Amino acid sequence: MNYNVDERGYYGDFGGAFIPEMLYPNVAELKENYLKITAEPEFKKEFDALLKSYVGRPTPLYFAKRLSEKYNTKIYLKREDLCHTGAHKVNNTIGQILLAKRLGKNRIIAETGAGQHGVATATVCALMGIECIVYMGALDIKRQAPNVARMKMLGAEVRPAMSGSRTLKDATNEAIRDWINNPVDTHYIIGSVVGPHPYPDMVARFQSVISEEIKTQLLELEGRDYPDHVIACVGGGSNAAGLYYHYLNDERVNIIAVEAAGKGIDTGESAATSVLGKEGIIHGSKTLLMQTPDGQITEPYSISAGLDYPGVGPMHAHLFRTKRAEFVSVPDQEAMDWGLTLSQMEGIIPAIETAHAFAALDVRKFKPNEVVVFNCSGRGDKDLETYIDYFKL
Ligand SMILES: *Cc1c(COP(=O)(O)O)cnc(C)c1O
Image (cartoon, rainbow, N blue to C red; front, side, top):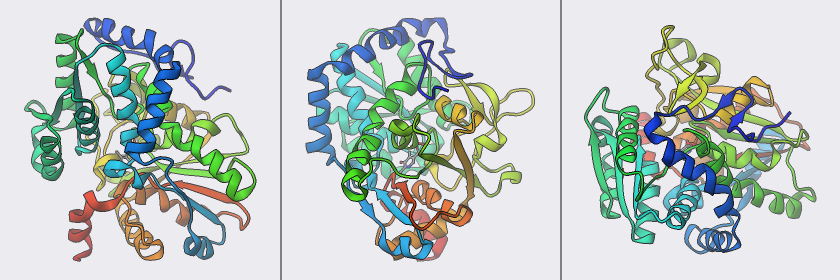
């Protein structure tokens, strides 16, 4: 069994590039060049140098002593929350902007829901002095004011998507329309392991620095370069893909994926794609997605904006179908409680997305000598408002 992308751009039954004909040249240009360019020594040198001096990598692998004692196992946290801009997303945007420059692009577009990917994109555009346009649903612009302000401070133009539900999928449609109209000078930075091939593989490779570092760090800490379990939350699936990447084909490592159950799997207000999803096409790739019987995409729900997505990347759909990964879903309430628990047991205030991953400890038992690595994907600063409202702080 192969868990990496194949030559046709598929992970088993999932993936591919289902795109309008007018987008073919743009996607083909990427497909033909991304492996070649990212393998160049000069590219690697520049990528690594920026990850080190700008993002702050390698991020620590922290042994969580109090959590480990309570759950009677060895728990480590990969501290992506310490990355510049507060989450793992910047690993990918740095990679893509360097690629865009080498393809001769001088204009960047992106779409964003909660604004986290928009901020990570605006950040690297400022770093490179490249024009940046971020499409965002008009409703999301209202709901995510601090991130809109951040993008503007960073010099990006935030363009509202006024159609449909005025949320993420409408912003995506606008971004695609823009890319069709500007095929020569523009690169479209997608923020997770979603979209047409080669995006899922490209983003997974940029995020794979996470498990690459863990191998070195675990060797030093535990005398072996692999853990027994890796655990991450899955929205589109990019932080999870980075955590799993170098262990995908290593059967000694158990993979656990945590999705958002929102108000509960049976309530119609959730984002538990593996449980509720059926095969379909979203954002140009074939994957599992939540849809009505006649194939309309269902509006997802989660208290965490980053997990509020109706699909998963094709790699994760494949990991689910082949049972290579265990999928768990966690409701809002448990995730919120874990936000508080992690804060008070380890002094780390996590993003609400990240807090979902830790709730796996409530449903899954680990042995005393097992090594369990959680991806601490982001910090909770952005979620303070939600924490304040929820806990009446
Ligand atoms: C965006 C985000 C996620 C979800 O995105 P993935 O692509 O699934 O990783 C998870 N955690 C944090 C902190 C995020 O900002």
